[in-house]
Image 1 (cartoon, rainbow, N blue to C red):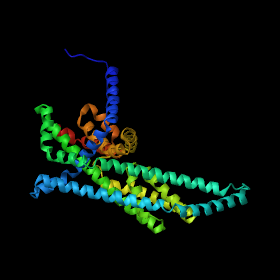
Image 2: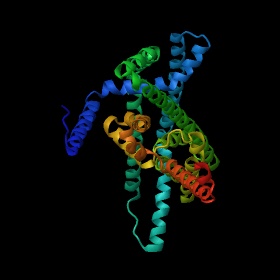
Image 3: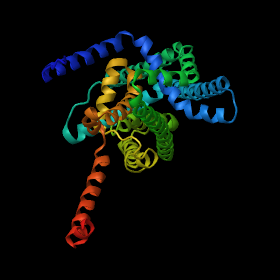
Image 4: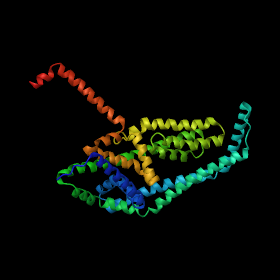
Length: 378
């Protein structure tokens, strides 16, 4: 006999299941995080491995070549960011003197215009420098912590990636055995869609980051900002946070420009460069490169980033967008969950369909109104 449960009971069970899943993800973080990154790297390297295998390169050798390529690129990026950050922290003394002159001019202006008595400039500058040092130390510590975590997983992730790519046919057969024969066609389409979506979305996002970093760096170089390449790359990486990421990345170079030159207009110009690049990225670069392969609305993306950061920290924020893109594919493929897929979709992906449907209906009514529809029925 089939037992019918009330809807509220199903909702409660679903919520308890989500809470249990989050608790397990946090409890076994050391296991799930390397495995999640391994699955992501495997999907990204899958097209390259297939091309190498088509060129008659043995599968084990093709996988090793792909892993070496990824490790080299990530190693160079981490080395560049770390070296630039260390150079930046070594110039805190120069920044301190510049801030001292800036504070003196601001206090003089306030005293002349508004009669505000200046405070102890030494204490004020010391507090500002201490704040800058705390920010730099915290950021450097986070970078070192992330790098250390990456190096700790350096021996585990490549092994996982190698196994996932080497045994991918075996894993597909395992998934087929989990479902009945009449549902295997839908499962194949879902797997292919997940692979296509994650590969195109992440590869497109990486291209966007490269383009935005070049535009940011070029703008900062034209303004004569020190460490323009570092700030350009750092802000471009933050584009994974829609709308607000690149603006957050503009605050530090704006403060450095203000402390270096002592002119507020320079900081405003730096923010203007990042705002212009943000406009280009949101309206032209991302739509052209990523297109409509997977479009997650900004609200869902921000919530996913916050939830991922709460569960796994920085690693969770990196994995948030691929995970939510995968969930959207699954929701769209399973009819009862289609409303959730619609909720995650960008509104621009929904409007054209509605408009096309209305236009089609309008012309259909005109066609039938002219009598063609009746003739066709006769």
